[in-house]
Image 1 (cartoon, one colour):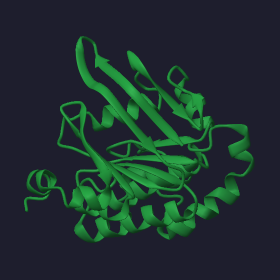
Image 2 (cartoon, one colour):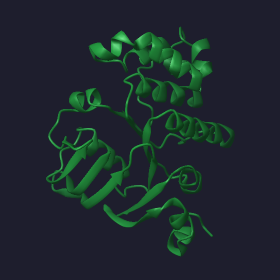
Image 3 (cartoon, one colour):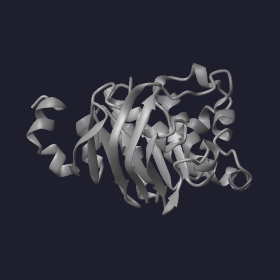
Length: 234
C-alpha cells in the first residue's frame, strides 16, 4: 500500500533521515520505534507532504506522492494524527471533528462517518459541545484520532498516540487502534511504547539516528536481543 524508498530528508543543512526504506501492507499495522530524535516524526511529515525528501520516492497504492501537496495526500486516502494532538482548543469537539472532513466527497458522508467515529469513541458523543481545550488528555487524543478518521482514510498514521496518558488509557488507545485496523484501515504507528506497539502490529522498523537499523515481523523484533536490551530494558 505504502512504499517509502531511499528517502533523504533535511532540516536546512541538517540531515534527519538517510536512505530510509519501508513498506506498509494493506490491512496491516506497521510500527516504527526509536528513541527521541531518531527521525520518527520526520518520517511521517515526509509521507504527509509537510516535508519534502531531497532524494528518494514515496508511493501510495502505486501512485507517486513524493511531490504531492499535503491536501492532495489527505484527499488521496492518508490521514496524519500528529504528536501532541494539535487540536483547536477554543473550538468544540464537534467543530474539531468536522475539520477532518475537508473535501466535498468527505463532507457528503460526514454524518455517517461521525457515527462510525462514535463506535470507537462513544465518549465523544457526550462531549460534542464542549471546547476541546477543556478535555482530559485521553479525551483530546480521542478527538485527534476521530478527526483523522473523518477523512475516511485507507491509511492512518499515528504519531505517539499514547504519549502522556495513564496506563489504563494507554491500553484503551491501543485496543481502539486494533479495532480501527480490523475495520479496514491500515495503520502506520509511531510509538515509544515499544512492547505495546509491537504486540498489536504485524511488522516493525527501528529508526536509529535517521536510518533503519532493524526490521522484521513484530515477533522477530520482540525477540531481538538488541531491541530487548535497548528499548525494553530486558
